[in-house]
Image (cartoon, rainbow, N blue to C red):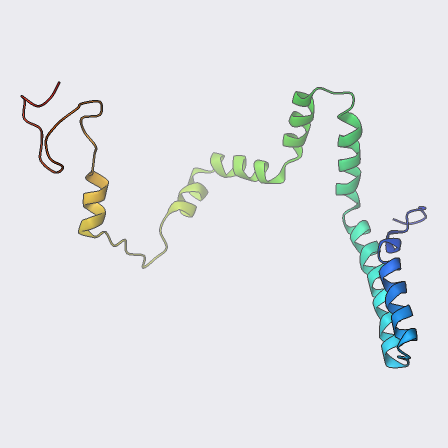
Length: 147
């Protein structure tokens, strides 16, 4: 954020100042103080780079926050969805049947291994929901034990 009054490095300033005081109290000098100065400069640089790198997203978030005070939620959602990159890519993928099928197609050399237990589990269906029976577990009820 160039030229603004925002000083993001102030977030870290108290901790760095305390660390510097600790160094001075412990009579730590030379390389440690130089490294602390380097850390301070590095943090300032990184924070400013992040703010510049994400300025469009930050601007959009601010616009959305302001708009949320005046627009109904449905309008805000419509605007957010119209800018959603992942949603746009998903819609484009759904329109491209060849690309969609290619993504779902197993890789070359893939061999699905289905065990007998998998087949049994896939065919396992619970029957007789709501029927009361006195038959032992595992044995089908006879016609005289159902109500």
